[in-house]
Length: 370
Image (cartoon, rainbow, N blue to C red; front, side, top):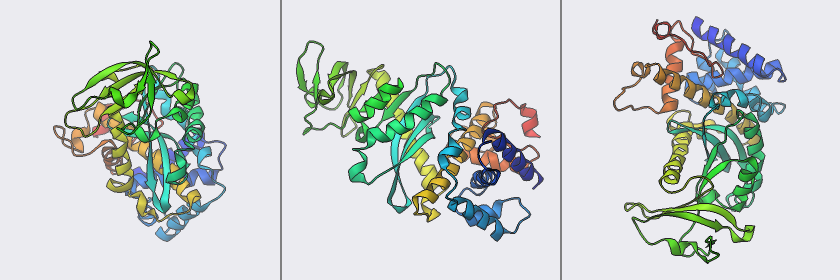
């Protein structure tokens, strides 16, 4: 219990330093909820209150958390924006891969998430609430344009990410904010036998893109112009049809092509595992029973930071040879986020509190083992 209290005080002090513009009561509630999500492994506020190392009665702690989630004065963006540069700081000198993908939440809500691909998971960087399924694709460019500036501003100098998106998100609406931000991209086109999308070769010859697809086993790539209605956009086109797959991957990119584009695009599937961790495997977000968008948004921002915290702890454990304390090493059963939560809970029962997500320092292995 003393370790948990020390961790909570350290965590609150760190949020006080990083969020000086946010009211103290809002910061404390935010920190309490983020730590509680890791302790309890659920979004259920009653179970979170049960895990809190506070002197207050459990019903009082639960009411405190519910008041924070219901507080209309708390803006999720004001909590997240100042933290983003500290989360992205370690990316200096790297070439990160970003994934854009939607997920459905309670109350028929759809969340469009932009995240960082890392060790078979995608850690959220920005997100936007999307309208109904019939309308949100038309507003895709606007939604992405609202997210990219904050992420670009938070990136270390000289870092240029590569954006990956699935077939349902590709198109000139997505390319515009991507090109404006100066990001690279690898996008899958939603093509089939009935598609009328055309491409233009460097010699000026035009053809239907689907006519370039021959059948299973095909590998083809080359320079071509696409999106005639947008004034022709020069890209590299890659066609990859695995013999075991029912449909081909038709990818466009501004920088890579061929096997490199295919290898990069494969990382898009990591976002599905992350959504499963948030919604069924670990935190069970659909069982929050929150249908009001504003309340759900405040719960989501706390969960997003909890995902980053768990990922940082898991990476620390892997890099310092500590994974075998929590999971088998030859055929691991747990992904990055489940491992991180296990590290968090284990250290809270020991005399060494876990590192907070914004502390980038090395602790000796001997200290961790004590």
